[in-house]
Length: 210
Length: 139
Image (cartoon, rainbow over all chains, first blue to last red; front, side, top):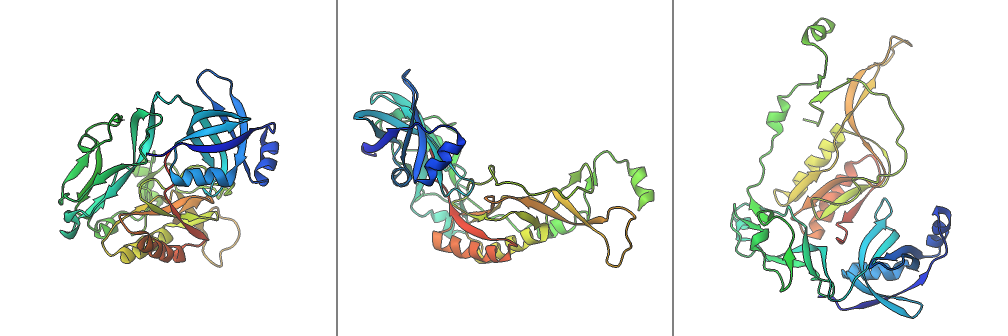
């Protein structure tokens, strides 16, 4: 569980793409805080501080604005096209006793015995949507694959969740499985046609042209 | 054999211009690590296949490889020493249109060091600069 992390923000007067671009050049990230039927406030905060908070996996932070502290969930983060720079952040006000739906990473622990039998570990679900208290968001959901044999799978219903946490995904959905590796399909592909079929062109038209 | 569409509406396409950056397909989705293009251009089906073979050899049966791109565009060419005119050339190869930021390949089920090694070899086969990326923290 993550403790309350404080983040200092200031109100933002820079609005519009030109102004926020100038703001970003000074090492700040524009953001917004909203929710709980209170006023939406445009804010700005240092990019390195936000990056530090995100790296830690913190989801709920104490946002300090002009001496006022509000508990808020980091709801959305926008990155540039290369995923290097932070462009914008959304904070959503939450109450400590409020139940919220968030997605948390699924962390695979242990070594599956099925891997030594020639299997490949396949993890179709990297994140899981859960409902929990806003102040008790688990950092991750740990899945122990220590007893997973070849051909076996762990489903959402098999997950051991912390108390007061409910999974929102389909209970039958596969989280992690050990599969037999896929065979090379080169030989089958090599027998395919040299050119794709053209939609709407009749076979009779095609033949005299060739 | 290199990738190619099964069915197309038209055999030949106009060249077009690779404008802007990738705002879709620019995050690691299926695996844990990926290879991201830093430049735009056309990536031929042969180059995609070369990358796949290199990655398969590098991981030696371990882990899983995902190819995030597909060559949808037919590229035409006219034979050498051909006089002007007589229309557009015949389809020569198929290519994927790549924008800066696109994730080309992803690997899963490998430790970071092995994934780095594997994707570095794949990057060597690519006609543009690439970088190794990890899955972003989920929100």
